Image 1 (cartoon, rainbow, N blue to C red):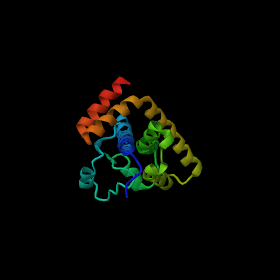
Image 2 (cartoon, rainbow, N blue to C red):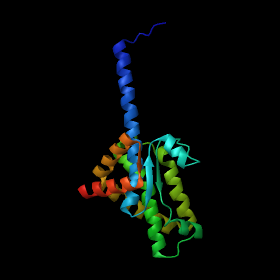
Image 3 (cartoon, rainbow, N blue to C red):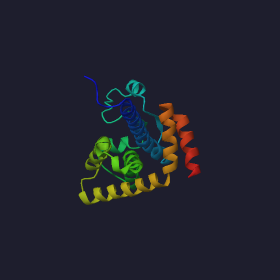
Image 4 (cartoon, helix red, strand yellow):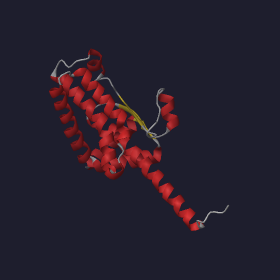
Amino acid sequence: MFSENSPADALSAGVRNAASERFEELKTCIHEVGHAFSAIKLRIPVDWVSIDPFFIKQRVSDWKGSFGIGACAISAERIAPVLERGRLLSKEDKKDVVEYGITLMAGPFAEEMYQPSSYNIQTSEEDFEQLSHALCMLEPRTFERNRIWRVIFKSTTSLVEENWQAICAVAELLKEKRTILDEELHTLIAAEGEHE
């Protein structure tokens, strides 16, 4: 049976589909660069950021890629001792937790800023769950935990807004290159951050 659609309709649908795929890919790049950008701004080492599933699977054994094809490898060196201890002992611990939270939330915040109308919170579920779990474990008092959340959200919003053009520029480069490794990533983000 022949389709009632004309060849022009089929071509138009194909163009729309390709444009949608490019949009989703750039959205993933912006999300991952949001994580990387915030970490580097906070002087937390980043090993790589990638949207290449083959590259990611070679480095992350339990990577599922369920909501996109991106990942970012951020050092846990500063937060790991606090998480292992299971509680906050000092102002420095709280600072490390807030900065850890900023790196987790910068991806979702950047993605939402890119296209608020199409933002799907499910794509960021893992980021929110990771932060929520850490805060519940480290701070049993609801009031104090909520205060930390507010600081993280306010700081993340400021960081993403102040560096929006730089985040987008690095995301465009990630889309083109598929993977950016540590030294190049740190250099790019430092250079882009200076232009803001």
